[in-house]
Length: 239
Image (cartoon, rainbow, N blue to C red):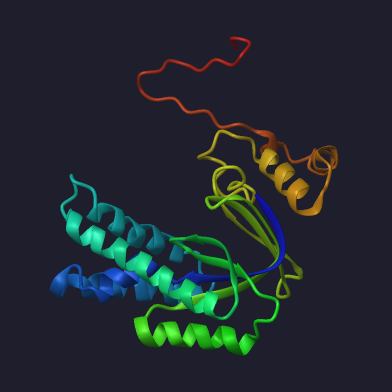
């Protein structure tokens, strides 16, 4: 794992949907996906959380393209989209390494890198160059702290002057519930994510986090799942 300061990030905006549109994966019907994407981006820019519903639908299209029981299944087209995404990622990495950047993390979402000498003008130049050559937008962020276990598990923290508070970005199962957004779909109590992130990022002791949140009962709750074939659940004490 690594722990770094002043880490840059370039994210591919709606990568797979944009690639499906550019490659005209659905022929004359590709405009339907384009309309959904533009509506989502309009809502996102306005800060409207309805954009999340559009995001769910749009992202599902890529998965259904490679799902053999789907009505839109086409394995070759799915491979074409993914291969194009990998080529785009490598193209951006080549640009960054030519500028002396050190790549920290590369995945389908984007790339994290370090370079203390990189200027804002150079970053904007990269974004403009990639859009001109590929019609794919890159979204830039800079993080004060970046902690990574591996490519699929990291925590990034940055200061948000609009809220006068810190924002976090996560990937992986270990701390994805830090913001409490998926409390009804995850068995692990929310407080565990908070304790881990506070310790990793700010070296706050577990006991201090527990004391600070002791009046927030919901954060200590665990969600259990049962299906139709189960009558009840049991804990370690057979309750």
